[in-house]
Length: 189
Figure 1 (cartoon, rainbow, N blue to C red):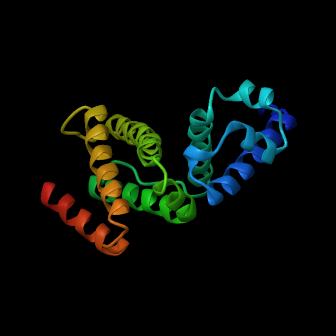
Figure 2: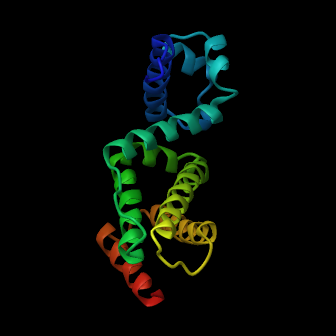
């Protein structure tokens, strides 16, 4: 039996999300107040604080929701049997996420939230890689280090590369970025 979701909660989250996107298009995150967010979403402050400690916790929820929705419609099926293909598919998945949410990412770049956004993505990428590698180990695939270390190493590389690429205002095309990363992966293997 599927869990039953309270429609009031779903409406609250939807209203907050829509209000947040509107406000982010008008001003920097740092300048958005809980009062503004609640007024725009047409909910009370008490309701907001029942769900979130502050606007930073709401931001983390918002990004995780975007990521969850994206992952549900763009699931990466690659497994660790072919590490090169596996890691390239993850890079492609991250870049697709950023492209699909380009307007939001640009708003984040103009605020001080880039590190927070990348930390949230990093946590999920590390978890996903670790799980896929553990599945590979159960299938008898040999790995050079523990799944957690491999996941942490690769996630750090991709997140810092993406951070650099975004801060450089994408002076390098996405295709060229992928090509360069692929060269590095071939050199490592």
